[in-house]
Image (tube, rainbow, N blue to C red):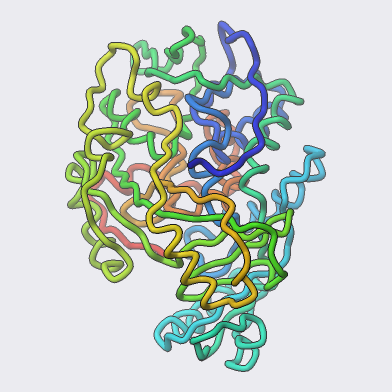
Amino acid sequence: MSPSIKHIPSDENLPPSADIVIIGGGIIGATAAYFLARRGLSIALIEKGYVGCEQSSRNWGWCRQQNRDARELPISGIAMRLWDELTAEVGIDLGFRRCGLLYATDDAKQLAQWEAWLDTARQFGINTRILSPAEATSAIPSVGRKWLGGVHSVDDGKAEPALAAPGIAEGARMRGASIHQNCAAYGLDITNGAVTGVITEKGVIRTNAVLCAAGAWASAFCRRHGIRFPQASVRQTALRTRPAPNLGEALYTRDCTLTRRLDGSYTVALSGKTRLEITPQGIRYGREFLPMFIKRLGAMEFGVGKSFIHGPEGSAGWGSDKPSAFERNRVLDPAPRSAAAIFKQIKKRFPALANIEMAESWGGYVDCTPDAVPVISAVDGISGFVLAAGCSGHGFGLGPGLGHLAADLVANDTPCVDPKPYSLSRLTDGSKVKVGAI
C-alpha cells in the first residue's frame, strides 16, 4: 500500500567512521546530508527502509508559506529559496514548481482566520491575497459548495514527494555522502556523555556527531537513551488518481486537497481530518498534548489500532534482541482508511474526475509535537547529538530549510535562522504550550 516512489541504490560497504552520521532518509535527512557533504564533510546516511519511504512520500507535496505559524516563517522563506536552488544544483527534477496555491471555503470562521493572517504575511513580505466569492468560484469550481471567498498564495508551490527525497539523497552522494538502506540504527555509542558512534544492524560507525531525523520513530529512539521527546503520530489517508483533466495545480477546500503531479495525475486527501490512535507513547505524553487536542477536537477522531502494539509508539519490546522493532517495521505503512469512499465523494465535488480511476492509495503517520512546531535542536546531556523531528505535517515543504538548520547545528556552524523556536527544551521545561497553525 506504499505510494510509488523513485528507488535509489545503496552503497555496499558501511564506513568504519564518518564525520557525521544521519539516522533517517526522509526529506530532512536527505537535505541535511546534501548540505553537509557540500561542505566537504564525510557523511553516512542510514535508513531502516528505503529513502523517502515513510511520510516524505505520503504527503500532499505542498511547499508553502501561506497560513504558517509565525515561528515557522523564517525557516519557510529559506526553504522556498532552497527548493529553487536544489533542482539546479542537483541536476534532478524534484518536481518543484512555484505554481501558486489556491484555497476556497464556505466557512466564515475559516475565511476570517485567513484574512487575519494577512497581517502576518505583510510582516514577512509574503505575496498573498484574499479572493472574492466570484474569484474563488472561478478558481475552484465545485458542485454543492458556494464559496464565501478564498486565498491565492502567489509564490508558493509544490514538489513531487515520489522524487524529492531520493533525488536530493542522490545529490548528496554525488558530493561524497554514502547511503545505506535496509540498515537500522539500534542506538548511540556514548562515552562520558558524548557520542562516539552509532550502532547499526550492519556494524558500528565511529563518529562524534549524529543527526536523528527519524520521523515518527524519533521519540522511541531518543527514549532508549533517556531523552524525553513528546511526540504523537496522527494517521491520515491519501490517494492518487490516474492522469486526469487539468483542474488546477494545487487546490484546497474544506473537503479535500488536490495536487497535480508531473504525469497529470492528482494526489487527493481529505483536508484537516486526522485519526489519533491511542498508544502507550500517546498515553505517556497525553498531558503535554492536551492543549492541541482541545484546540483541534473537531478535526480529530480517536481510536485503538495495531499501532498500540506495533510500530514506534507500541508496547512491543525495545530490548536488544534481534530483530529490533526497526527491522520488524522497515516501512511504517498503515492501511488507508475508506479510500474508495473518499474518492467517490471527491468525484461528486469535481465532475471532471467522474470517469477517472484511482491508481493507488496509502496511509501514513504524521509525527507531531504538542505545539505543532518542529524540533531542530541539540540535545542536552549528550554532546554531538542533534534531533530533527516532530514536523507536524509541515516537514516536506519546510524540508530543505529544516535540513539546512539541522546541518548547521550538527556541524557547529552558524545557524541559518535563530534555532530557539525549534528547541527541544521548550517542550520539556514546563513552558506554556502555544499551539501553532495547522
